Image (cartoon, rainbow, N blue to C red; front, top):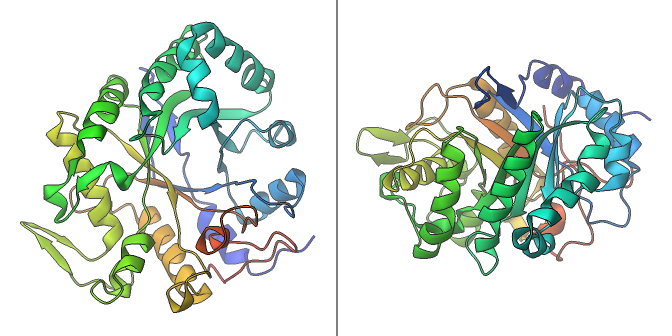
Length: 345
C-alpha cells in the first residue's frame, strides 16, 4: 500500500525521543516526542496490521489505545519499537476499585499475555472521568495497579487522563485553580503520582475555547500561528493558547502543593470538518503541524521553559461511530484509503 505525502513527516518524526524514560531510581521523565491516538470507534477502519504499517511509514513509535483491544495488541507482537499506552475502560473502574483481586485479574488478562513481545509502557486508568461521578474510583485502581507493576518489576507507569474541565479558572494562566470537585478527586491522584514523578496525562484542545468565542479569540493565537505576545501574565508572555492552558494547569497544581510534576499531553488536535469555516482541513493542518513543531522545538512553555514536553495527536483516523459533527473529524487520515486528510508537512 502506498502512503502519499508522508516523506517529510517521516523525516521530521524520525528524530523523536522516547516518550517515557526510566532512570535508575524508577522515576519517569519526559522528552520531546509525538505519538498518535489510535481510536477504534468506526466500522470502516483498516486492519491493525495495516495501521502499524502506516505508523512505520511515518515514523511513529508511540501510540495510545483506549482499551486493551486484543486484535490491536496481538498485531503489535514483535513491534517492540512501538511504545503502547493502554487504557482501562471507564466501565471497568467500579469492579477494579472494589477488589484488588479484580485488578490482578485485569493485569493477568490484559497485560501479562503481551509482556514478552509488546512494548507496553503505560497504563491509564479511565479517560476524563475526573471530575465526575466515577472519579473517586480512579485513585484506588491506580494504587492497586501501581503496586502490581512494582511487585513484578515491570517497566510500566500507571496514571490517568484528565480534561481541562478540572480548572475552575484558567485566565490568566497564573490564576489557574481547580474546581472543588477536582480538588477532592484529582489532587490525591496528583500527590500519588508526585511520589515517583510519574506524569499526569492531560487533554488540551484550544479548538474548543476558540470555537466558543471566535470573535474575541484570534485564530492565529489558537493555532500557534503567531510569535507576538497576545496574553501578558506578569513576567510571562503567551503567543499561543495551548501554552496558556498548559501553564494554567501547572499553576493549579502548584496551588495544591504539587510542584514539578511532569505533564504528558495525551490528546490534542483540531477537527477538519463539522463546524463550518472554523473546522477546515487547512486550519486543522496548521494547528497540528505547529503543535508538532512546538513540541519538538524543546522550548517548553513560559512557565516551564526549555522543559521536555510529550504529546499525542488525536487521532489517527476519522471515526464514524463517534457523535456526529466535529467528533467524527479529528482524524489525520481517511480510514477508507488511509490517505492524509491534509498535508502535515
